[in-house]
Length: 617
Ligand SMILES: Cc1ncc(C[n+]2csc(CCOP(=O)(O)OP(=O)(O)O)c2C)c(N)n1
Image 1 (cartoon, protein in one colour):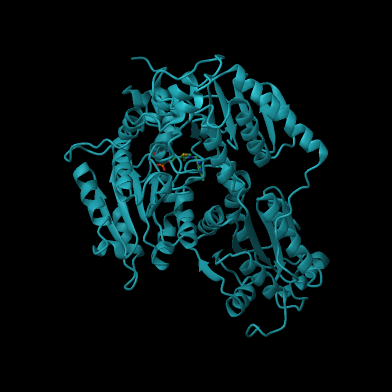
Image 2 (cartoon, helix red, strand yellow):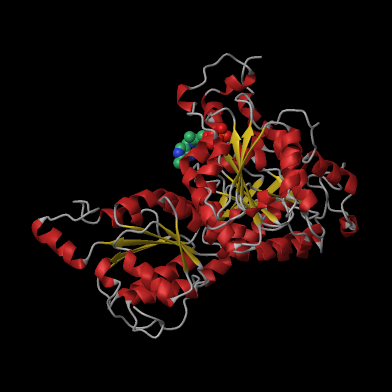
């Protein structure tokens, strides 16, 4: 291949399709079967190859790129690469992230040899369709391209499925097929929504009508916005529902920052027993009817609670449940719009407006809404909400040792200071990327002023996700600086991705929450009383080999790729670091910053403290 005027081949076809989809970076680890594709992509498109040290890192980067941009891609080599990548595509499948997984495999001739005489070439398994079979479990379309004449149809079908179903697809391409001629792409690809039928409309009307009756019977309501609002791009419709009805809203952790958390109706992240106590009181006691919209009822969204019962409406996964009634095949966007119109028709504009932090609640269960309810929709009384928000950013005296909660409160205050503009229009120069474990629970209440400024993989929960993901996020939104929060064990899974951060000169700040080299959350789940000060064993399997984390900056830096390593243990240390980060002239900001945050092995975020409730005093 040489230049854009060259003939069309399968490699060029796929590369141009990626470019048309706005994919600016392709992540992955090459092998000889993939080489011809990468060369063609470089020669004929602007898509940039980002070689990551591991397939996991590449997969997580593609996943996170897709979370921001709407679709992402990763490419690997057959067998050895594909099996390493599998976990990340499994995560994208579960989390509903559209990722194109490209697997370059041996030539058609090599497959013929294998079939005829059982001759295996590198990376082949005697299980003939092993790669295809495993990827079928985690994709909405999986194709093997062995015939260039069919390749354009197969590629277009798979990519259209990826856009439409918003889940991963798999393309396995035989090495010789890359350079074989094929027709040019025709037109551009677009998602194809399933047609809305008369049956869908009827089901939608019934779901909305029942939902309104449940709201009427169980005043006051609260909304619980979740991850599908983000995945399906429904934030404007969710905002329209909140603004038209005035109903206060919480989000799941997975849906954190679907709208600006400065929104006057935002009442915090509800995460069951792991919620901030004020948020839990409002969600469970002040509100009597809970409306989950696109909210997944996963364990990390529900912290020991359930989202079932006659006080719940939940619209997710393509259907709606209202109490114990289920309405299948109702689209989330249509339900949000229908609910908005029906609630406004019944209670008037802002007729359900309230600030649940203000006491008493303007109207109570089953009581008729006062005729002048709309008047109560003025700006919420600032004292109560402000007090709540302040409680999230309290700071500690400088000499005090850091713990999870005071660390995140200080980070919250730092983000508040960095905010530009006001209210829901505010922007932040930072995005937060959180890993699983205590990092996720600790960061859930950090207030994010800007829509889509918080990212976590909270359903699949693969530890180490953040270190790969942050590369993809930074490629997709280069003008934001990522703050990564990752436990020491999670960091050890994907530490190599520091190399990608340095190589791409990304200015990420990675905070390694170093609780004395310990899988804290695992200890909490299996032996919670250890954290209540009991003499319970530290699970031997939860103890990590200690690393000198901050020194790794020297390992991954290169002469023209600086990286700084810092160790902090007190609030004074943290304040000094944050001051440096905020000073653009400080040399530390010329590249990634790796921060080893020293914490005690017995410490934990208070959010997970409910696990110790049953421990003897
Ligand atoms: C890829 C993967 N392997 C194993 C697990 C099981 N797991 C969940 S949390 C966790 C420990 C995380 O430890 P660390 O990052 O140190 O954070 P902490 O729990 O101390 O906050 C493990 C091993 C997982 N979720 N993902």
